[in-house]
Amino acid sequence: MLAKLTTKNQLTLPREIVKEFKGIEYFDANVLDGRIVLAPVRMQPVDANLEGIRKKMEKLGITPGDVAEAVRWARRNEK
Image 1 (cartoon, rainbow, N blue to C red):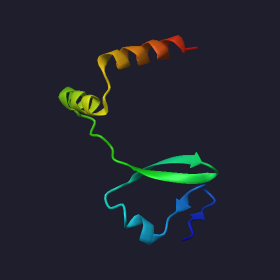
Image 2 (cartoon, one colour):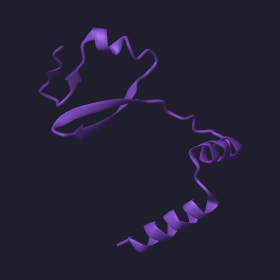
Image 3 (cartoon, rainbow, N blue to C red):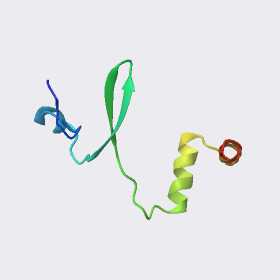
Image 4 (cartoon, rainbow, N blue to C red):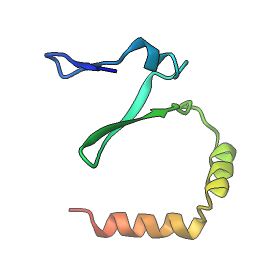
């Protein structure tokens, strides 16, 4: 299926593809091996609570030590 690039650098996706992603408004766009890859993104509510964030971190295997290391890394690389 073809997707058209408009003069404003927007892509028009075929209806048949879009209908596979009901309720999705945002896609993460990347280039991989010379191809544009779109991945659906589900937005988290702004008022996500701390307990929900902790559960998600646990599910992903992220420890408090991982967070501390990430902060140290980010601060070390600040310019």
